[in-house]
Image 1 (cartoon, one colour):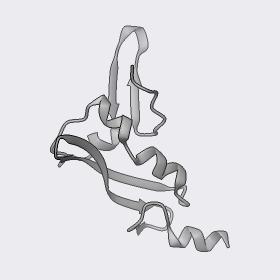
Image 2: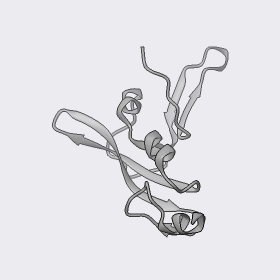
Image 3: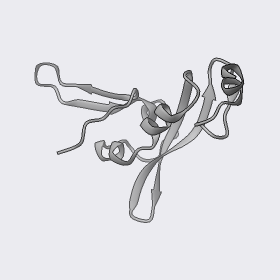
Image 4: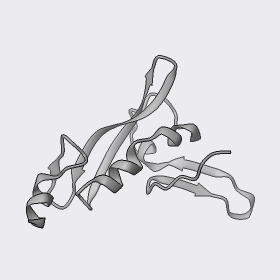
Length: 101
């Protein structure tokens, strides 16, 4: 059984017997070479980045990369929508950090 997913990009529709699951982060990327599977959520870094980031208006873009025999989700782009600043490290927005001092 899969562990529960606590991610703002995960969508599960189970109403009236439906069993539709999707990752809105990966669906938004048309260049994603590998289609999303539920097992990608088990090792996805996105929920930890969202929780650990000092930016509360963080938006991400991701893709699935194949490494040897494994497929994993990687964050390819991060932006602070409050300051419209592209972030090299999605955990730290320097402008949000400066506001909190």
